Image (cartoon, rainbow, N blue to C red; front, side, top):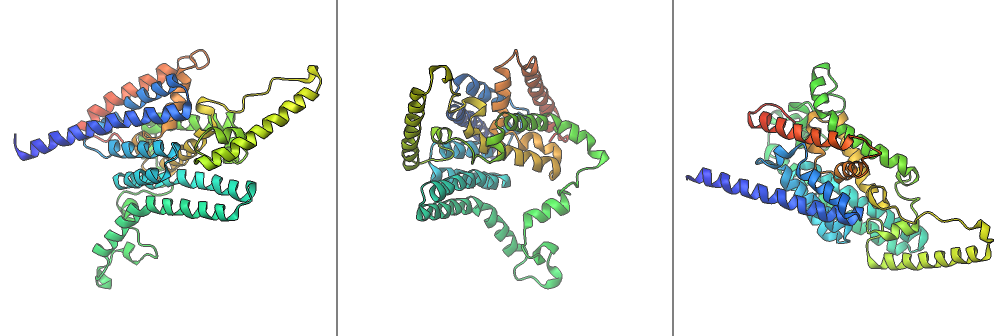
Length: 368
């Protein structure tokens, strides 16, 4: 076996290792967020057999990106924001859309700063929260910025004006954006052409699942969704780590919750027996929990970008690393009487795309 063959075998082995670790991290993340082992396990299986599996099984960047993203999300929901930032930044090294993972940090920073400023009345704490969140977000963006700087200094710096490419003269010279727009025709509504209809049809299943995932969550939790979580109850915010991640915030809120519960019990005791009603649970488990909100918002942004800006057929693998796609699909399968046969449709879709992708991609035909 020559050097090239040995290198290819080793790369394939590392790729499969990354794919296996992706499933492990997806399972850990799903267990924490959904708090339902059955739905979490099914979601993990759906990920392992997702429609873009051919890209996870070939020498491609998808498995590495998903591995780093899921690892970052796991540490994010566990409260380890520094480790999460590191993995998010590394995911940006694997694929440029890794910078979007900074949105999770921004979401949490926004809520923690709001809590510190308006509920705890601690301006210094709010300022420190914003600064820490901004630094972590900048760190996530660092690989993308470094790549743009590398391109600028190699292709623009020290060149004569006549030798400069158009993007070098831009106010903000971005090599990545220029390549995407000039050579690939990527841009807002640029792909909306009649000849691209087959590609829209190719991407329609995953975009439909993404759309239903977002819309169904918004319809079930409209107050939580449209307020970006600001109208979520204190009890629900305190039950997870997405909104208020550290022990100080949780202990602070725990005291407030206890005082609130005491007040409620006092009112019930003083009221008439006939007026006592069973209250709704403070938190909603599974796909409709408040902790799922930042994931749904992230998916909504990615799906909109894929549909309106990108080559739409790329959506199949672009959205393959988004957890809500699998969480919502698993939720549907957990309620077969309510969503008759949709579970079979999802499995059939995954199997068909795995088979189709294996044939087309390995023979250099366009798939996604």
